[in-house]
Amino acid sequence: MPFKILETDILIVGQGLAGTCLAFRLIQKGYRPMVIDQPAISSSSRVAAGMMNPLVFRYLTLSWKAIQALPLAKIFYHEMEAFLKSKFLYDIPVAKLFSETDADLWSRKALLAGFDNFTDGQTHFPFSNDAIHYPFGAGIVCQTVWVDTALLIQEFREFLMDHNLLIQDTLFQQEMLINSDGFRYMAIKAKRVIFCEGFASKQNPLFSFIPFRPVKGELLTLRIPNLGADFIVSKNIFLLPIGNHLFRLGATYDWDDLTGFPTDKGRTYLLQQLAEVLQLPFEVVDHQAGIRPAIADRRPVVGAHPDHSNLYILNGLGAKGVMLAPFLVDQLIDLIEGKGAIDPEIEPGRFIRKSK
Ligand SMILES: Cc1cc2nc3c(=O)[nH]c(=O)nc-3n(C[C@H](O)[C@H](O)[C@H](O)COP(=O)(O)OP(=O)(O)OC[C@H]3O[C@@H](n4cnc5c(N)ncnc54)[C@H](O)[C@@H]3O)c2cc1C
Image (tube, rainbow, N blue to C red; front, top):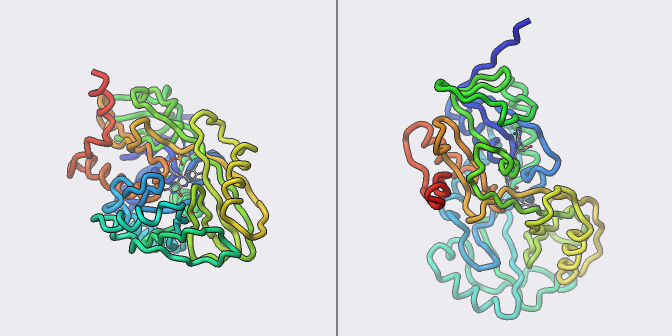
């Protein structure tokens, strides 16, 4: 018996944060994209802590495009909440615990344009010393947000399934036919294909010219009955309150082990860092690992394939995917609709130009 052909204008490969945000925005604009996704336990988006922090604490700098991306992302996720009739975005400030010399640098940085949007540059003491060890005080970052990415993705997945827009399967790129009028994969015919595969794109032969550099990250979930939930605590590690006295403790960065499994090494590192800060009893209730999709030049990769028209990629969201995804999605849709060009800093062709 002949099988039924599924025709779509846009096929999205992958329903992590990138594919989810892209599909949502397209649906908002009146498109009817199909999504093909084979969920993986170690998918970055299911494991992510979900924080939106406009600052990079390691270098005390503003994160790339934070000024534009952060406000846009907040509006975007609020729109998703309204669409799905759900709640997954929470405002919560970050308390960055200072080392001996940090307070002075922090107060000077706070005078810089951009930085001053997010901190007053003062030294604060929001915790009791019986709870948190921080002899040099803390800088407070405002406008920071926690997005429950696992819930967001699960609820959007249910929406896609209810509307027959999801195919739960793996797309094997070698078996996708590229014709002059579009793409054919099994029973699917698509005019455009957009790869949002996360770190799995490292194996995608169509994008072998991109220097992917995925980074494994591990997180623990802790129960800390006596710690307040008013701040994300940050010092080398972060401690993020997620309700019911539960906190996410993260995260590790490992470029060598890309297995996707939690390790004793990761757990030991996180608990050692925690011991320098937390003075209260706690219990470990979960341990997860995921692989962040990142690129060697530490920028996302977004735009059209240099050789195949109507073939696109949205990847390299790195450690700031929650804040960046909506901003990047809008650039990509503008490109597809012929309304704008992609920032040369992030378009895929930059790697071809460099190698010539
Ligand atoms: C421990 C940890 C903590 C993090 N914390 C934060 C944080 O606090 N804030 C922040 O902004 N970011 C954080 N991140 C990063 C964030 O998770 C990523 O930036 C983002 O989720 C990446 O989303 P993605 O959709 O590109 O990739 P993924 O989440 O990997 O999604 C890709 C999806 O595509 C599917 N797929 C891949 N290939 C195929 C195929 N060929 N066919 C079918 N399906 C396919 C995969 O199974 C998966 O479902 C963290 C990451 C980790 C690991």
